[in-house]
Amino acid sequence: MTARGRFITLEGGEGAGKTTLSRGLATILEQAGHTVLRTREPGGSPGAEAIRELVLGRGGWDPLAEAMLMSAARREHLRKTIEPALDGGRWVISDRFADSTMAYQGDAEGVGAERCRLLTSLALGQVRPDLTLILDLPVELGAARARQRGETNRFEDKPLGFHERVRQAFLRIAADEPGRCTVIDASRPVEEVLEQARVALDRLLQAS
Image (cartoon, rainbow, N blue to C red; front, side):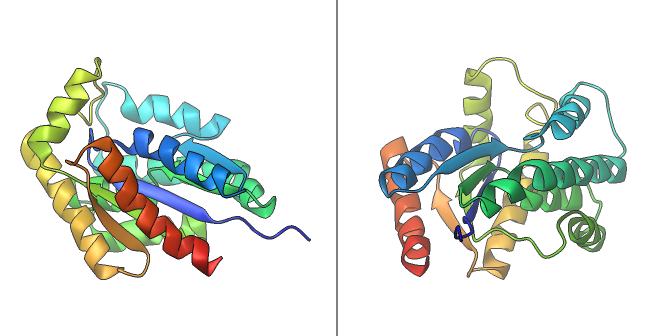
């Protein structure tokens, strides 16, 4: 019987370097003999990608409606992509997951923690990440990095005050769940960020 894979999520504000870290972690895991699936949110399955186009577009959404859309996309992502991969023994690395809804819609947009927890429970059931790496950096630096990538989405275009609320929400999540979450200083060079992540990953590998 194939052993179930493990589930790693990467969280943090805009420009934190989640995509770069995802690639680095995948390489480490593959060198350790694991098969890896890299995915992202919102998105990661056909239905979820369709919702991604809606929520990242330039139109505005009521914050609760936005949180509901994110959770609907997450349910599709979980059922169509994440669970089949884990059941098949693959390790899954997701660029964003439920903590992003709590930080962005729940805190920064005022939906509230209780309603976000309800949406998460409906979307995920008992599924939770085995490890969450929260990439933390000053919001001014994150905004500058996002602009350097080229065209921005409507979340990246929000004012710095919004991004500071997101940053503080992620730090609270990490403080509330230290067994699952590790905060990484994403202002450091790429090699140092990957090393910080590798240390956290080693603990998970040793427990596997």
